Image (cartoon, rainbow, N blue to C red; front, side):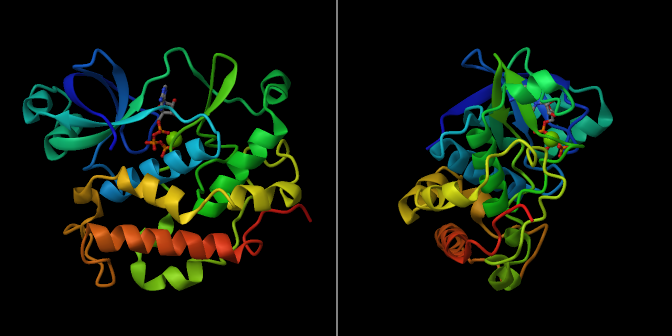
Length: 261
Ligand SMILES: Nc1ncnc2c1ncn2[C@@H]1O[C@H](COP(=O)(O)OP(=O)(O)OP(=O)(O)O)[C@@H](O)[C@H]1O
Ligand SMILES: [Mg+2]
């Protein structure tokens, strides 16, 4: 299980984030970036954050630590900004907390010095994970990579695993190609050919189960706000379905592998 903390104060909104994440203080004295359950794509974005972030860690990538955070409705009611108040009140209960990296800067792909700090094999591993999980949110325009203490950290995996938005069409997901034409690490990553089999071998049923076990049951239950007749009926079925789809995608490699023309 992920550790659970309790929110003590909502500090500020991260306005640059499309899903209106906030910086929140918790009772373990930690500071977190919180992704709210009631935002944008709903709990599925939080599922993708946990599953893909954990797979990234299993592959040796730096992903800020994740926790679950309990949000008291009173914290929302005290918020003066109407849009944020509404989001917080509707998100009362469990949300996703991501360890805040103080002083981190967005990765600037235009800077030769920043590019030089990136290990090509690490870049290739990130590109491979994004291809596996169909993460469209790591482009030049929106890199979702932070530099912290001169090292690269991966954030924002909420848009990955798009198959969970339409469970009736998961068959076509397994072999669907990944558009990496605007991937921020496209020109930095080492060639994936020699690395891909080794990476794929690490995405085992056990590794996927470990990642899926970290997701709270409530976020895997059918979402009443976004009905899908083909959605798995309960959390256990959902975990099995995610595992099956992702293993089918691993097996379908190299059809989705980014390889230079
Ligand atoms: N762990 C962190 N530590 C420090 N800053 C962070 C962290 N996570 C996110 N940020 C900052 O907050 C911004 C928004 O976070 P994130 O990209 O995860 O949110 P989002 O709403 O999913 O954004 P997007 O608009 O890309 O969909 C990031 O671009 C980054 O500047
Ligand atoms: Mg982002």
